[in-house]
Length: 89
Image 1 (spheres, rainbow, N blue to C red):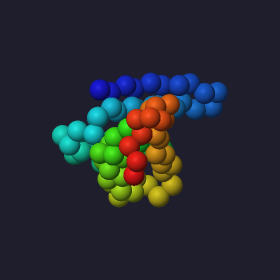
Image 2 (image 1 turned 120 degrees about the vertical axis):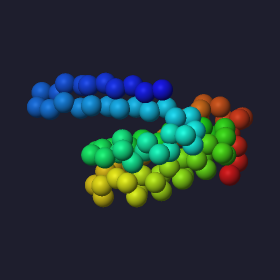
Image 3 (image 1 turned 180 degrees about the horizontal axis):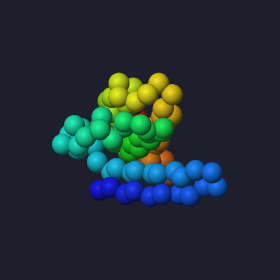
Image 4 (image 1 turned 45 degrees about the horizontal axis):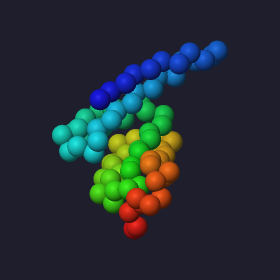
């Protein structure tokens, strides 16, 4: 799924484009096109799934290839409130 949201600031506009690909390979080819000109990129992974972390790691490497050097990147862990379900690395 995809969400686009504009936030008006006093001196500029921020456009958020949020993609939820659920780690699906079929969206991989779209990544370079949507990263062009990005100022920031967030990758969210599920701490209860080692596979989710592996996919996030691959995506982070891809971001480094397609984003400008000054693009801010953040890896975000989801479901941290479920400690009993955390998959040990």
